Figure (cartoon, one colour):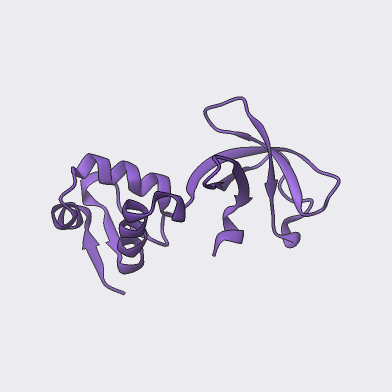
Length: 128
């Protein structure tokens, strides 16, 4: 798996490196798509494809948000979580294998916004 420095990708895309670092933290998964911090970040080829897609079609790639699980819902495929940085309590879709294991834990949630500006949330494992 070939990895490329974030500065090289920023030059190729004609972007400011600081904007690319912010985009990386919003869209990509650590240890899967990139390693390192700041300007010493190395991106995988898959990460570069995701970044290019998110620049071309912003709604195609969901944002990653950290959340704290508050409680389970009556439906076994859902939980309620508080999003980091806001007081929103939102329902989040989860894989069945995680039922009963997440209350009180920090998770990453994919925020999916559609064309009508409605946002739904799912656990990061459901996105792959």
